[in-house]
Length: 149
Image 1 (cartoon, rainbow, N blue to C red):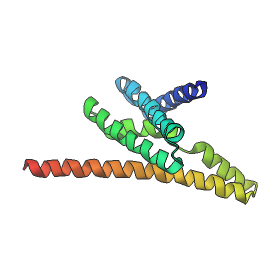
Image 2 (image 1 turned 90 degrees about the vertical axis):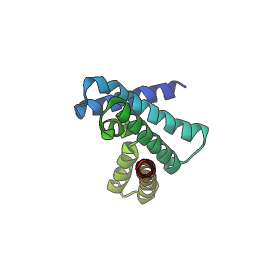
Image 3 (image 1 turned 45 degrees about the horizontal axis):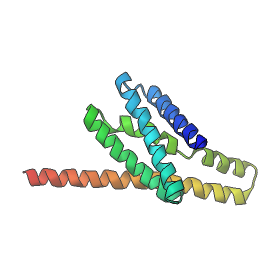
């Protein structure tokens, strides 16, 4: 439990740091940072409670991120990317990518394939989750607009 709390605090700080880096308005800093906590919490729930692998957990988390960002954008009247990008920061497979590159330098091809596969799964999961939810929301919005006319 202590490890999970530390991870959630780290995700808050990481998202806050990227929000500051992107010059997000002060009144939007807290929602952006809490988005990172929410997304990492979804990822932890998917991996620990549901037993999903990296690909599925990343896809579900990224989809939740897209839904969160769309909702916050409408609520706070701001672009979606302001909330989406900082919230995605905890999902970025930086450690896995580092281990992959370290294995290449050490010419440890077994570790390279293992770590590289994990890095690609997380990356594809993020892309899949964002794309599916974004496309679904676009389609629903367009359908609603057509029915209105």
